[in-house]
Image 1 (tube, helix red, strand yellow):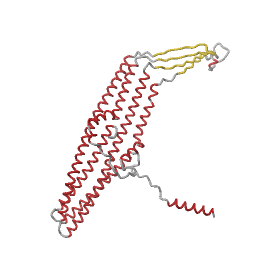
Image 2 (cartoon, one colour):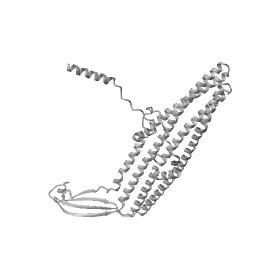
Image 3 (tube, one colour):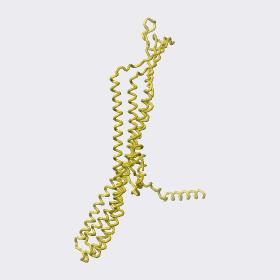
Length: 424
């Protein structure tokens, strides 16, 4: 009985497990841009390659200042054992004598430090390049998400307008059936509805293309699902969009300028190293000599190169100076371009804000009132169909202007954040 009860309990548990609801699948990303940025930071191969390059450059710092490997030389003297009873041999204890020489190259004082400092600066430049890669990638994701969000809203707006046209079409058919309007009105409303549907197809195509572009930036399959966009990032307060304050942040935190500064430091160290090459490098050596089974004598040696090719070194020094000048000029050019881009983006975001304010506070309310009046007038036969259709188009354009202005603000904000190297 007890065994049967156990079997019944197991069967009941198995049946409950079989009918238990499956675990909820994790929702796809895309509801907000922060989710996409986190995925890109973790999985984008372009950014991963930039980080790997920076890590590789960091590993070059220590070897740059390390001493060269010592050299061990073995010389066998009289391997034929001439004049002795033994025959030829290559064992150290069975030849006339064996000389062991241990050599250690030593650069002139300060050269190792300069090489290490130059490599450190190059590693910092590589880290700055990784920062540039991430800033560009993040800006592309933010801009694409702004377009993704805008297209979703435009599609929703277009469908609402199609529904509105459907209601107008019903009114038109009723009035046409009663002989109050010409057949042309019924045809025009159908043409308008077909044009809106055609436009909707284009919007949906752009929406899917934008989703595929976002997936590519996230290193996901092109057709991987993305959640419908829910919210945009809030815009910073106007006080945070001051040109002078942002220009200081660009100069201080832009990763491109950080990398340019590091390249200047590397060029300075390489220039100093070229001047230090006027002085000789050394090689120290010690050489014990073995005769049969014992060491008879020791030798010490010092070797140095003679820097006699002065014209060649002057050319190398001038080359290093020119490279330093080039690095400084590139930084100045980059800074000028970045500040120009900052000014352009601030002007564009201000213009988009004014367009948005005008559309929200003036154009949309006026267009809505005009449409309501035109619709009532058309129903009463006081307004023709062309006036009603024009009023509908005005309200639709005002709503589209709002969506497009918001998308423009988000795209410009993304570009400003790319310039300053961090979020506002």
